[in-house]
Length: 535
Image 1: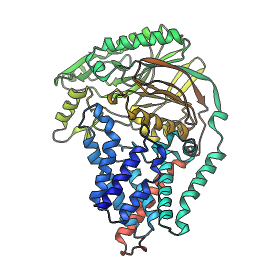
Image 2: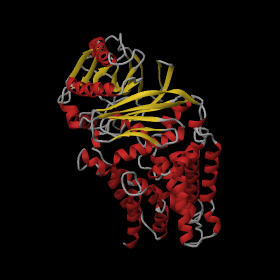
Image 3: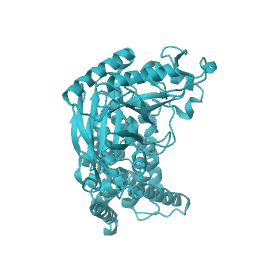
Image 4: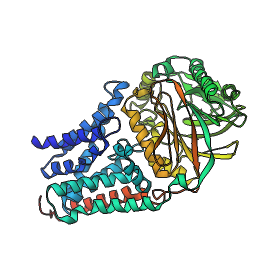
């Protein structure tokens, strides 16, 4: 039973390393503790128990939704710790523990970020290091995912030191860290090369509307409250190029102007479909945007999170739900829709179900989620993220955009940076989780996305944490969470051609190490059973 203390200690230390908890560098001994447990014969049940405790504490912010909510994700994601142990046992037949352990951890972390349902790249091993300048510096070359490799290797190094292993086992961690540092050092800082002027003057509105208020009040009440904060913000900070509202905070259905047919969406309390003539719905949304635009300069724009609907034919409206996407929509000051970009990574069970709900009980589960939380998990997503391209006073803007959950996906930002993004917007509504450590972890991920791509990021949120992050991942401006207000900030832009070592291929470090790890583990499983000298 004593061996069970090691995975439990590893779980507690790793949670303590997360943003909003204790101290980021506490992640460094994690790999050493995991290796020590495996070398003492820890079973898969012990792995699962450690994983369950880790994820239960990590997702404790879900208790703001319901006190039982952390249990399901914790019980499921704990099996990734089992996968780590499985990989280690194969690797250990070919490698010493100080190398087998890091490879096993990296192999499982990489797969977890991909599978299932798009992956759960939340709380990666290196996330807590986002407030460390050295980590942000290294992220320019290897990213948050590459830092997972470095943290795991340093943990293996600690184990080798403690067990007085051969000096060769100490080499990988400092060697790879030095290579990443050299790559970051040789690359010009984005803020000193290729910067575009002027910056985009942004006004991010944070209305602080609770989940209950948003779902219980009428659409007009929600719009009115945000319009009041926006009016006060524009009076205090005039001259904005962009006024930003958070994810889903524009409650009116939005569709392309001139569209024929009907928009349908389900009633929260029955199977009845609510119907909106598409042309009227488009005009209603644009009319409200014109009201905001009257307070703006003619070249300014209103950017908001909204649900974008595809119309259905009139004859199908009684039985067919409109396909919808969570999107960022750009309105001109005169109300015209200039651009929109849809969310590509959907929240499992919040915005989509496995197999799109095509399983026994799927329809009933979706209905229950909708009635309980006001969000039906039947959203659709495009295959790839797209930029917001639209005119402004100084030509054309090319802004990358991420919506809430997408904030933790490196590929969403990497692909848009490769497509020519000059800066990024993140529209997020995290009222589900109160003002918990979830916000700290979201901002930590944003800081890594900025450092990886060499582009500034402005987060516009409903109740926090609204921040401006520069191209190096440093916080430049912020608005206190859990309060109504606004953040006026200039969003720096860089040339669309700006690249970092991470964008040039550094992002491949974790995938390469993970594939190597799984390959060697498979070799160890199926090759003759020859184990290296025990520790």
